[in-house]
Amino acid sequence: LEKVQMISFWASIVKHMERMSSDICVPRRADKEFKASYPIEQYHQENFVNLYLDTLAVGIPSLDWTMGPIIFRMSMAKHWTEFIDGELWDAQLVPLVRAARQNSAKISSYEVQYEHPKEMKAEEEFSPEWCEKRLFQTNFLFEHVGKALKEGS
Image 1 (cartoon, rainbow, N blue to C red):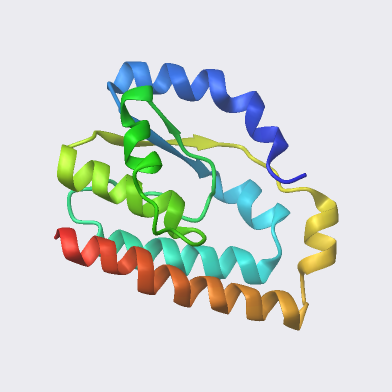
Image 2 (cartoon, rainbow, N blue to C red):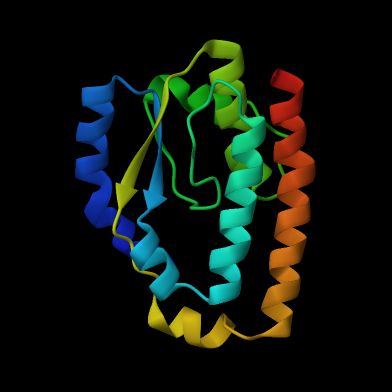
């Protein structure tokens, strides 16, 4: 299972959201743990994607777009349940963009010391197949999430 350790961070993320009056929070991997526990190709690819999407995300704080887990208030759920066109990562991120752009949802980020499973790093690092998957993910996110960010700017 992937990202099971995230469960241990939920209480602190919720407290952060309450302090910040956030509607949506995207956890951000602490760089030390991110770099040490992820395949090096994934570390660089996801940082690149995050930087690119941040450049398009006018009015949205810098996010770890590729982290995965997102936490939001129940009042925000409609953005995800009403988005029926999503195929992959866009199903998670386009509703976030729309919530921010169309409904002025307050988005925040909260750093977590998440460590990826060692088994996943060992399996995926230096693997051409996983590099190709990451290239696909990069292009997909640029096309679909990038488009949503450009439409709303």
